[in-house]
Length: 307
Image (cartoon, rainbow, N blue to C red; front, side, top):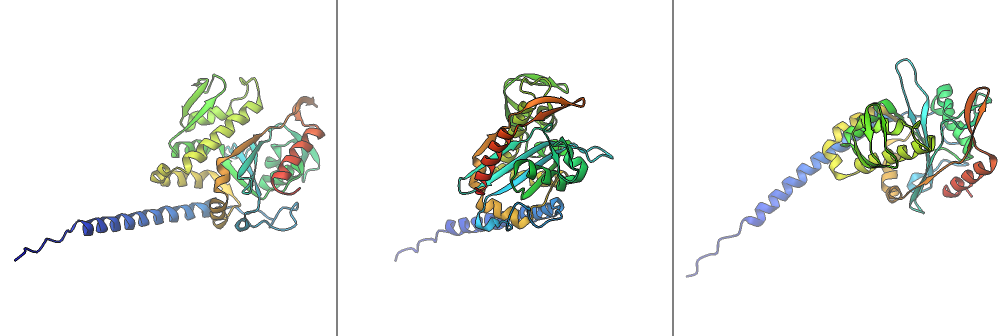
């Protein structure tokens, strides 16, 4: 009489282990999702308009339409809302699978919409918050600005620290705020990153060199922020975002962007504005002539499929 073979129990064990992993992962991901939705509620700051006056109809992200974002880096001080020392326009085109990134020099002289005079473009935020900054940039570039993201630069260092620091490639060596930055790759924490983006006096390219450093930091933060390793530190990341970032993007719009425009984030093209310095009434401005302004406008309008 044959002995009955003992049933192998390891498949059941594996199944149970897999089930536990899935349940645990699901619970963890739910916690991340819940924390993110709470953060988005804190970050959300609507503005008093449904759409840009430069659009006939409101864009629909679900239909993968190209859109634009104005990124404002603001130095907020106690008792002073500050000026937008960083103004970057992003145009996102899912059909071309890329993003155009235009850094607007803060000293650019242009009409301040709502004030009926010309001044440095970064003063628009100080005069009239995000609404006036958006209207002024729309007029200067002749494109709709669909969304804004405002970052408190004093707290930006917390965001860098939350993602575990960033690596950047500096074109020059310089020292600022007691930190030494070498030419080549530098690994930076939050305080170092803030000094890195603020330096411009020692840069032979002036504000244009500063814009390049800002672009590097922003791209590095995005790259680290979307990596899987960041999930283990999501509490700190979301806390830093909730304290220092405001946007008119809703949670559902953020989900649509993540779902429909993800590939575009891998291809970022930098656009530069050329201009000449000029002192008017004792104040230094960057003057952008009409030919250069038209070139920039045509590029961005084409990328937004407006032409």
